Image 1: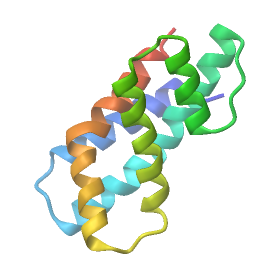
Image 2: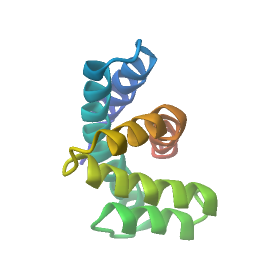
Image 3: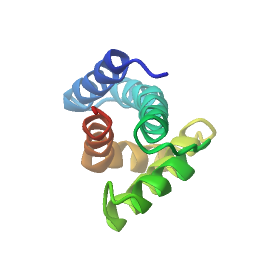
Image 4: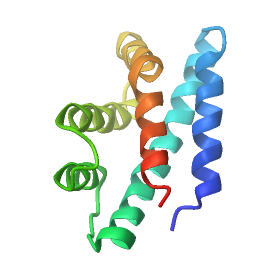
Length: 124
């Protein structure tokens, strides 16, 4: 079971990193914060789906698809969540500076908001 306080703190620390003046160190720190915030997000959704809807899902993509099927968010949000899963998986395996910058930019423009949305959604 994901502790709500840990998820909240992770989202806040990620937002804090994304508001800092960009540098290589800030970028790398933000990406690392994204990785563990993402883990808390999908596991929080997993716990919510089990607790509130009696559904069992075992992977991030499966959980995000289940959320869509329940009408928790729209198709566009679902596609962005699935893209976020792919980017999260890539951050642990890529050393390509161009790809890292693309993911960092999506963190600033999309993923911070999506992670916050999952936090708010799973409050019940």
